[in-house]
Image 1 (cartoon, one colour):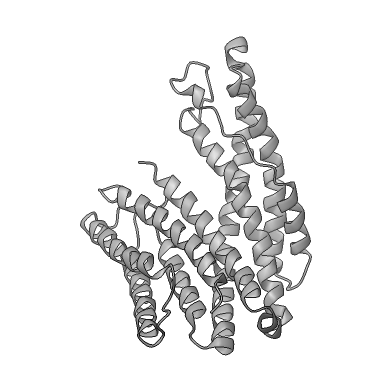
Image 2 (cartoon, one colour; image 1 turned 30 degrees about the vertical axis):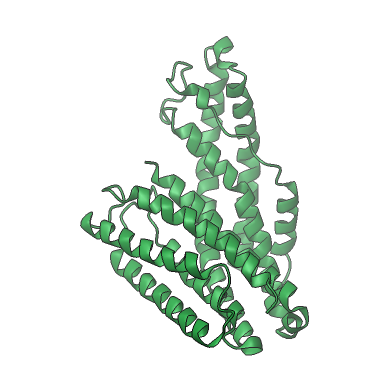
Length: 314
């Protein structure tokens, strides 16, 4: 089981979650959103631009992981690897996302650390992406059979340091954006409550904020052992959000459409996952990896459902 795949999917889903609510709120109540303040909307727009770039460039990480799955990273390719046909994934066109992210980095609100990291991240991606593209074509066309993998070794020497810089900048940006998004979550939730009270939209937002807090503590390839104390605290907060939703459903006959059943089921599975982690002393590799996969997949579904539900007229 490749735990890294869990992390990549989780990050992508968490990023999408931040991008969606601002757009959903604007569509649901444009006049009220405008009244919440241009500063909050500018902050959301900036987050959305950075998030879109991170989501789209995730493909480079997936491609690099695929390459690392079959090649000896210290020696480079020989042309005789058992799974050399895996090659690398082709990359997406990200010109539009880069342009918007560059513009956002220069727009208010000024976020000196994140803005600088985004610029470095773009530069690192632009250094690595052409190399991945060349390598993807090289292995796709089986060119290594003609030159005994000579070009493959040349590309490897160039790609390894470029990938290291890119992944380092990605990790920095991930950490910074997680903190930034947490602040935006609180501001958006407060804005919805001020405008509508603890409405269905507020309930959806509250559930997904707390669900993402759980996802942020999921295991990774680099850190397969979960901090159970922090994980327990996140589960407690998510459970409290679910109880808040239950109270709302008791007083509003329409309830919380689309997401309530999925969110309830997810809580049960999270608790089962936590029990398995505890038996393995927090190590996902000791029998909990399949459950982690299910949680990520189900969480992604919740993200999509929450986007749709937030846009529904109330």
